Image (cartoon, rainbow, N blue to C red):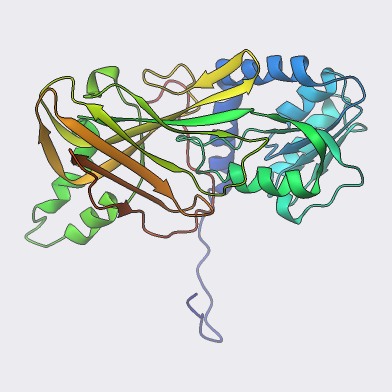
Length: 330
């Protein structure tokens, strides 16, 4: 971290954290498919008298649903300024006597009683990049009763090779001189970034394939990944890998952001290639996606007939969860 010299006063800078938080949480509440899927799951799975743990509670909407479903106590964990908003929402709905808002990370939280059910909607655009495995594994060890119900039940990561020049051109144009200056370092930075996009089904050159499925009640792994071989359905120029999730929220209830997405609070991931890759119909394409142990860094590759060298994201600590779409945006 850069040190500020003694006696130096920094200028005031507008902090748009509140606006970002509002956009993030308003978009999720506005997503009826997402929200109503979790509502149905809570009504189905919460038993009268249950103690519920809600990790990444946000506005506390899932905690409210748990209370309506009969939970005797809900421990809602949300780190940051949104915890105060959630506390006020619980109060205005007359549920603050049953919902305990904890302003902390769940890994630093202790409960007065183990929970019967864990619900967490820390599901990212490709399923795992918001840290859901770390939160669930820690909660299973310290905060839940043996055999506790976990919502979601499982998450699958799905991928396809995509031809999406619209998304790739944001990187590609920087490979040419700008004002007769070289900005290719920024292009290289973009190649090592996981981008959030809205993919069209037309952009998929291969059929989607599931790389991995993680059962949250039993997994012991903090990293995810997999390799699949898929055939090109047509000639094309592959610019990257499209990636998304399918989550089983509870038995009989699932959500997915597969393109075209029906859940507008999620985008899809676009994992760019260093250079576009021409393919012919029938080519066997090998897709690999891997994460580090905390799912904070991701590597991917796409090769013809055999795996290619992995491209890894630049290590950066994000200040907020990855942005999701606002309804009506592209």
